[in-house]
Amino acid sequence: MAAAWLLFGVVASLAQSYPNKPVRVVVGFPAGGPTDAIARIVAQKLTDNLGQQFFVENIGGAGGNTAAGQVARVTPDGHTIMVISTGFVVNPSLYAKVPYDPVKDFAPVTLVAVSPNVVVVNPQVPAKTLPELVQLIRDNPGKYGFAGPGIGSTPHLGGELFRLAFKLDLVHVPFTGAGPAIQATVGGHTPIAFTALPPALSAVQSGQLRALGVASAERAAGMPDVPTFAEQGVKDQDADTLTGIVAPAGTPKEIVDLLYREIAKIVAQPDVKQRLTVLGFKPVANTPDQFGARIKLEMDKWGKVVRDAKLRIE
Image: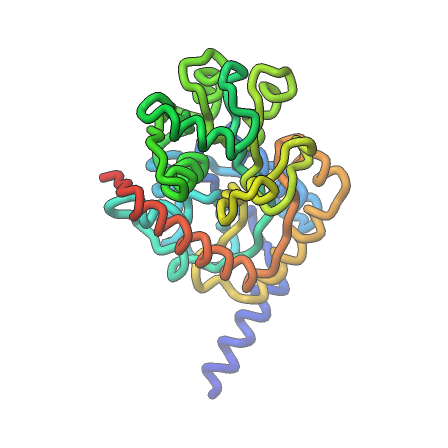
């Protein structure tokens, strides 16, 4: 009993004094991408609000697996946290081996922002709606492929979900990122692209690409005139790119809850909302329990797509 009370006192004291040194905010990708940009927005605000530096550390490699494997094994005292994207929940199904378990090795803190996938086509493609695109592909078997920013990316999996749902002869053409995939579609080398909204935004706004549908429950702020998949009768195709924050498993609940409360306040600030909207993201803050449930839901959903599409990275 005495030991239990001692442990309780240590945890309470730790939470009250947190953070008592700089905090690593790990991103599993190189600097410059959307996950990194969101991490830097949140890190700067946490620095301002909590009086200790929250600094972003980029650890690239294996689609975020390298960083996740390292963070899973650090001391769970709240002084290392990780900003994750959807790959965090997809990779255990996609890769033959990963150095972490998204549920067992991490404590969910909060979802920060979501960005829907969007289907875009070169203006020379005659389809103006998703049903028209489905019919076009069916009428021309073997002719159409879709560009995506790499195997196992959320846009790629969204494309596979679409292909499987309609039993289409539609081939994925992987590129080394969203930028090259968009440029290939603008140039007509690939007629269709499944992409996250941010990299497609300027090409759609300038008329270089035509957006046919947003794979989300509601229309995107950046493309308010583009209907959702569901509005066009295409059900169960939501494919959001998630950005959230996790801590190593065993991080005291008091620290997790403190981080959640602070981040919820941050994403509600008008300037942060505006910056996230410019990036093509919708600000969201849910509780640790809600985020944990969303992680499990996404793992089940995309795990099935990976298996059904027979995708594997050794």
